[in-house]
Length: 462
Image (cartoon, rainbow, N blue to C red; front, side):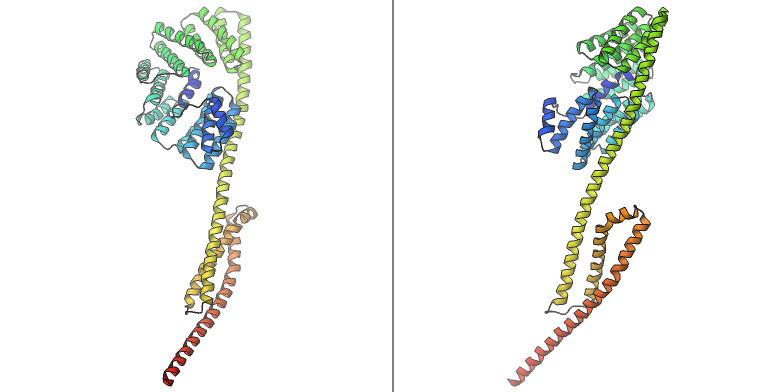
């Protein structure tokens, strides 16, 4: 649970690490609706999508992300594809769909173009491993991240992640070292979510180091900040962390009052996972007080909402698989379109080449001015045969694939049959062209001989 409480906030932070000018929501919607420029539409979609997945409007986010992937595919831009898959990974991470999040971040990493982009994505991957308890793997990604000279928000994010890992490994001194390094980054912290997670982790570090007074101070500071900024989800999650601290400190009455407040906020907001988590805390509290009715009530409530969350996750997993399949279909459609366009161009090139070769052969056959070697006709004839075969291959390839069901053996047999028809035809045309050429050469020589004889006779007469 301790790992989970900061997941929403850290991913919001990390989504801002790639430099991007802030676009207001109204402007983003206008860009999407009115502009014809796909790059500008992508910018608008990216800004609007961030609003969707950070406010848990996941259906709207997934629909927009499919369009982002389609635009990136059409323009063949790695930078756009990286941003689209990173946004997909962010959405999955907020939904706690960790496997899909890892796949999406890895896909984004394949399209990263700069070291800073790669380092930031290493941070995203590290955080997924942090929240799933794989701290050693997380550290390996943070080491990769550390190789890049980072500044500003990127540097803050890296130090924050190092601090969280050390908290998870029960190394509070090291955690505080990195948190203080994060504090020293000369960047004004305007992100409320970033500030809340930082304060919470400071409280955790002091609790682990045994300084209960400072831990209590930081936890209270975190909750006060969340109330001021109206961070509902963070108030529930951070509040539950503070409840755990109060229970470990033996302050059951304070824990009960805070847990009841959190429970009321979670029910009002309709956050099922929050209700289940707080119900579990209240059950522990009433076990201490030995109030049987309340124990049974909150235990049943925890079970009911846990089942509800489990069912939601199953449904979400099915939706995620469907979404991944739709992305593959978009990619396949783009590749099929590119292949078809390339085939059309190749057919046109083959036709142009066949036309040129045919023109040269006809010129050599019909020219009345000079004698042509038969070997030249044979050479051009072979080239023409190859070009015609390639043209037919390009033209018939889609049909042959459908008929043969992509069987290489059947396609090879079909091409052999086409060649078997072309070769005899080529021999006949070559034979006809050669005989025409011989006849033409004979006429040219005969005409030249007549002109020579006439010239000699004229000279004798003179």
